[in-house]
Image (cartoon, rainbow, N blue to C red; front, side, top):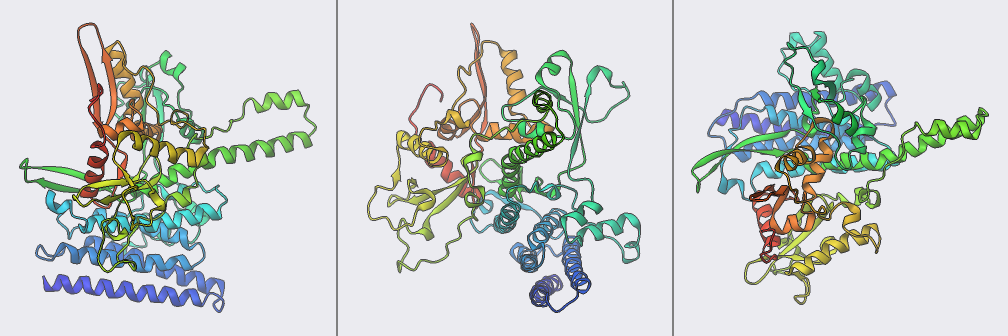
Length: 543
């Protein structure tokens, strides 16, 4: 165990020294030649990459405290954050974070089995390093998005980000060398020239045209989902529309991987009450991945408009008659605006998870002191909910939201009734989208007449709208975290997503799953927030 502790200590010291080296390198940017500067940056990237590989391959010792291992992993954030000072620094930082996630996923020193009681604690180390990584990546992505004038697509964030254990003598082999060169890429252009995969892609086929011996992982494709214009306009292959799906049975398969931006780290949690183990996937970058999806949804119509403007100028300059220009434009993509995101400043909205460790206003923590507050990321609304603890030790939602300064003088901050909660959600939407905007206009209202008369039709609808389906998985995911058929408010009130509902002559049924609106620092905070919202609701015919 002492040998392992010594190894972890040396890793932390090396990472601290490397952060200092990067600081010094940034200060020398004006004195070194461009070639010398680039070589020095590549050496720093190589050291970080090698450190991640070394940590991922070390088997450790079973008696080494879990927190010590995580501290060594977290020490890698020092040099990774320091990279932001360099040219394309946010790009370098973001990519090294993705490599770090893959290293954690491949690590061998930690037995990721824990009790439910420990997994619920706010200081559970896996929660803390995930929050730290996600916050750091979000800040880098936000600056890149701003600097690009809302045009960055973040294609480089999706891909294998390979971490392997290669012998020194194997590093000159072409397949191994490529991974090292890719890790040291200094710009998006250089990275693209070395790694052309760019995440997973999709292949479509008609089922009746497949060879009987073709046993690839084909899955049925059921048709469109509301809001999937985003995926369809970005796709490099044609995604069958509803008319094509009605005419033929289409199937789809996935090729490649999106890598750590979407992949979780899996841990086994033992539930003492139920006396059973269950697996839990903890995403490394849940908010960063959502930010990228949102940025693409906002940026796509902007780039479409720019393309149409350039096309109009080119055709006019070439003397093409107006009627012919109009005919040509009918074949070009039209801009599709996301009803909610088009009004949201995502860089401002995706602020880091608040981490308030001390308070200058009070000697002892009061009930509504920011130190004692609980912050929950509302996934569909893209904002933080703030909860305070009352004197009776119950968490309640604060009406001031992200503007909450704490230390409230009276109880006017409390949202404890269903009507007030409905108005609070509506106010968030109106503040962002306009005073006349309704929840239905931005996709948060319940579906109209969502109970069908036929069981088979209900199952088809559920399969089409809510099951992750490759090329339009972001839209199906949005359908779920927006509340499904119930809409956002009812989904939060019941802490469920309604996936299906049908009523025949003699029988009926509903299908639901756990709500997906909340992200928190730990599982305990998430469950506490969900319970606090659910308690506002009195029983109804949907319960």
